[in-house]
Structures are given as structure tokens and as C-alpha cells.
Image 1 (cartoon, helix red, strand yellow):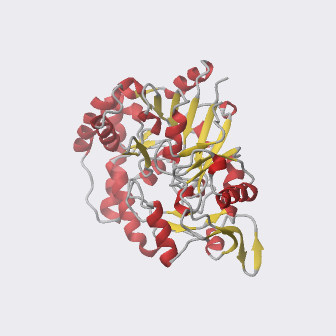
Image 2 (spheres, rainbow, N blue to C red):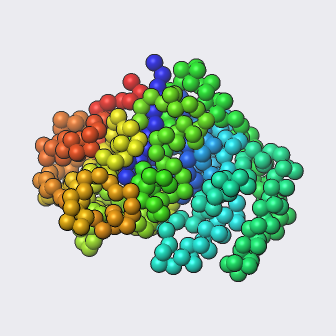
Image 3 (spheres, one colour):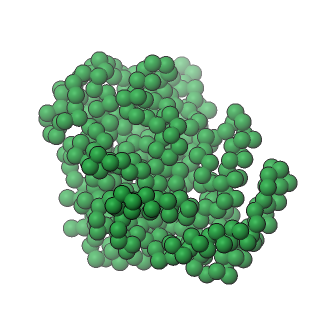
Length: 431
């Protein structure tokens, strides 16, 4: 029986979703990216070669798989074309029919990127820590009902009129409020028409395509970006991304009914990382944090920024499990902990001398929470060559079991390295 599986991040992003989606894509017919933009980077290692994907689903690295950029995504066509060119130069994505782009996906325009950068600059110490890719301003225009969608590129007059209207406002904002240069309609119009010539054949009604695929009993994999704690509604607001990152967005951002989703799988590191600003209760300062960063190669795939590192936060992941309705979890980067003699797990917080067991909705409260730690023994043995769960060191098995108890979610796969084969699958969600 066909299944529709959603994969979402259970922390602050960067959990290794790209690798897990790549593994699960072998069993899927269609892979869908349903939110976010090129502010997310999924790193996949195939045959020793590293691929970093920003917009195209990770399933593109498997031949014959249909990959869809859904309506919930905001698309920078320049970045998309760079990604396509890079894939082709490495012998991937040789069949144009394997990529579809929703006609309802909104476009990132040059003025979005400029506004993003200017706002971060003037915020100073209060900056959010965006990637400066124009994601937030593009979503703003979507909600303000003045956004330009991929389908508009196929209707030149419609595109020109929308662009003219938007630049009237954006140029006023840039020049009069931020004292920046504006944009010329003619230049931008021609620039985007040149993109259209290369991506027009991908643009279609992907909602209809997906629903037809479901009716034909195809296996569909929905690929989330970022992580639950960056969700614009449920994350550590305002230090969040500009889209909904939780599993419910898989339906909204791809144009299918929520009853069509069969299983929700969360991805979590064996520790915790965060990029950008915002509260992070288990963050490690000094040598301990640096050791995790270097062992785990914790630098942003999109920006190269060093990630903040800390111990596993069971309070946060338990919160993510509730929001997403997780019924399975993948634990990644277990091997990064191989050399440690002791490992800490955050089981609760202290706030104003009170014990807090639930993840606070208020970032100011979270920022002043102190973690309560449970100490576990490390295993100090290499795990990267292990292919069966029972062959892991006993202390590693105890650690995995304890994380299951604290989060209330069964761990169905453990990743012990960057490569496709460096993963122990206990349960295949498609089977």
C-alpha cells in the first residue's frame, strides 16, 4: 500500500534532513519541498561527493524520481538555475521531466534581498540573524497580496504590471526611508524574462499532479526545511524563519488535503545546534562547544556561518513531537559523540527557581531558563562502521533508549556518518 511520509526537523534546523530524505527517496516515487526558500541548505554525500541543495528536493540525486517545488516555497530563479547547472555539471538531473515547480510558488525579487539586508543592518544588536536571501520580505508580499508568482512569468503583461506596481512602493521605501538606490522596471523585467526562458517548462499545477499521484497509489515524500523551533508561529519568535516549518505545512504548502498524510518523521541530532540569534538553553561555550562544532563540521551549508552547539534538549524535542504529531524519529550524528567520556541530556529547565517541564512560548523566558541535566556515560568507541543497532556500544544503546523515553518517540533510524550507507535503519516508514 502506498504511503505519504513527511520529514521535518525537530530542533532548530540543520538536523541532517537532506541525508535522510536522500535515503528515503529510494522508496518514494515523488519528493516534494513544501516551504522555505534558499535560506536552507541540505547537504547530501553520494559516492564521496558532496551536494548542497537549496531549493530542489534531495530526491533529485536518484534517477527517475519526480521532484516538486511546492506552492509554499519562495523561489529565487537565479539560485535555482545555479543549482540546476551545478547538478548537471556533476552528472545529476539529466532529465528535465523530473522537476516540477508550482505555478503558485512566489518569486524572490532583487528588492526583497535588498530590503532584507538593509533591515538587518539597521536593527543592529536587535538583528534576527537572517540569511539576507530575501525570504522574509517575499513572504511579506505574499501575505500582503502583492507577491509575484512563478505562473505570472508565463504571462508577460501580467508580470510587467505587477512588477511596475511593486516597484512604485519598494523604490519609495528604499530611497526615502533607507536612503538606498531603487530599481528600474525595464532592467528587472528583462532579467526575469531571461530566467523564464529557462524555467518555463518546469512551471505547472503541481497540486493537481500530486493529487493524481496519490490516486495512482504513488509513494510520496514531503521534505521539510529548517526545524520546528524556527516555525513562524510555534518557534522562538521573533528569532524564527518566515514560514511554517511544522508537518501541517506539508499539506498547505503542496496543495493536498491533510488526511492524505500517513506518517510524520522527525529528524534530530544526537546533540543540538542553532544558527543565528535567539535563545538556546543548552548552548555550550568555550572548548566543549568548539569540540562539538569541529567534530560535527557544524558550519551552515547555505552561509558557512559557524553553528552554536550544545547538549541534547529533550524539552525542546518533546515539544516538537507534540506540534508535529511525530510517530517516528531519526537520530543523526551519533558518531560525533564517540570520543566523549560523558554526555549530558537536558530534561527540564529552571526559571526563577521553578522547574519548567514544558517548552516556553515566550523567547524572553526561554532565554533566562537554565537547563537541568542528566549525565550519561559515553562509549568512547567508533560507531561509523556499525550497520546493525545491536552492534552499537552498550552506552550508545542506553543513550538512544533514554532519548526515546524522554521525548516519547520511537527512534526508527540512527545515522552514524555522512554517507548514504552510514545509517542504521530499524524501521522503513514506507514499508
